[in-house]
Amino acid sequence: MGRFGLLVSVVAVVLLGIAALAAQPVAMAQEATPGAEEMEGVTFEPVTFATGIDLPSPGDLFVARASLEPGAVVPIDASDPSLGFLLVESGTITVQVEGPMTVTRGAGLGEAMAAAETSGDLSGLMESIPEGESVTLEAGDAAYIPANSAGEFRNDGQERAVSLAFLVIPAEGMSGEATPAP
Image (cartoon, rainbow, N blue to C red; front, side):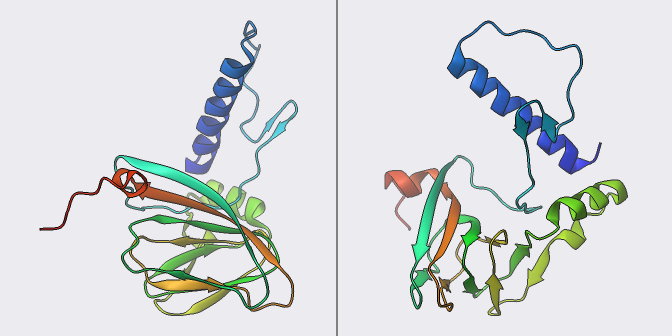
């Protein structure tokens, strides 16, 4: 089992454990462990990933849905310590940051991940976007945006665009209890 298969297995076990705790019925053992990607009534579909990232420890996770009307622009401040993913659900969003970013394309990602798992090389699944270059994301595409990267994301299209933003914020970022700079 490759890194992705192991990751999906761990996520599946955690999600099933949370569901079991919430439901509070008596748990019953299964005769065999189902495949990580398919369980009865549950399907895990790869969406995006980033490897080798530096995570704040401890940190807070914040998820928000952003809807951008045509022409709308959301600035990203260089002093923002958050890092995250921007996952486009509908429409198109253009992202530009003054730092390196990676993009995964939703179209065919599942098949590409299966091939990468077999070869052990995940590097071909991500596009590296050079500093300052704009990239257009469509539904299913995601961008990993590192912390402290000035830039923006915007809707250059003619239709409303909707995305999910998954942010990892240093713990003091959400509580406002940051240590003053010397």
